[in-house]
Image (cartoon, rainbow, N blue to C red):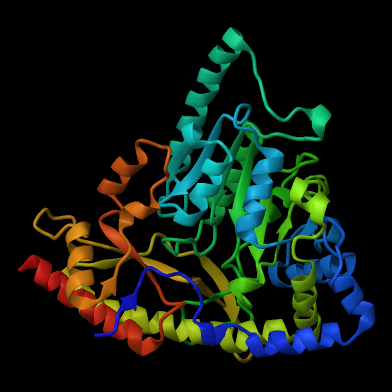
Length: 455
């Protein structure tokens, strides 16, 4: 019995655009006017032409109400993970920043970055609700923190490790990490109401909203009869922050994007978008001022694919059709084999958007896509525990199942308790890695695992 990994969350190797990258590399390296720039230290924020091309592409994809995105809002990065660390380095402080909020269940591999930044004792999970984030829970925590901080300030004053005199132009009192669209791990998409309300809270309490927007362009209509090409993707938090009146010079949101999910993870190239002052601040991070653009060569490859249209064709003609088929296959297998056992897909409230049919007619549809969905086990006491399902799946059926408690917010002592009451009674499933027939086999084994655990 071949092992099947349902925990892994990355693209199948065959979907990595190796042939397209080879052609892009040949094109860049065969032109001295490009290769000379690609192979040297680059500008801290990335080449201006490449920033311009990315801003144009993002404007076409998001169609922001506030108008086209300008290149001074863009910095080229070495991917979303690396830039998350840079954001924390430049705009938060382990003494001054009062709390680090993460929507839970959280993307577990991001948690360590916050711990490395010194926020272990300040981590706070904020439960995800059916619209993406429990705003009332967040509001209560903010009010409690404000009251506590006021008392502490009166007693000892406010200190920080990153004073303005040393080049730190802005530090935020709070930061919140979230995957608003097609989230990891649950696949939920935050409602428009919650997006706007979250930005309003961010402005009121001086919160930096760090949005992991890496799945936005891997979306399709939930309606199988509608094509994906003209699907309208949700506005990002950074778009809403820009369009609402009263934005400050630093803003309260940053969009962290990546080409890892669109081309290949090994490229380590992405982008951030925020207010121009914020972007300039990111460009002054130590590793960048020392080494220049963190992905100079690979950004030239991406640029070639972007300008030539190769990247968009790869996403539209290869990735989305493949993931859409796998998603449908996985959902059908779950409904066939797991629903009779009481296991259901955790959907939340579907995000409603618009797509066009082949004749150009605009239709309302729910949004689907990304890499993940979450399944919930029945709540009755007689149902096997998550640990029992994981152990039997591994030992008897060569099935690697994610433990729900891996998605807790480390450093928050109450996060594991909330997990035991909610998402630890379930697990994340990914369709990006396994082929369709393997996904069906995996769910069949999952059902056998549950039946054996119940016996």
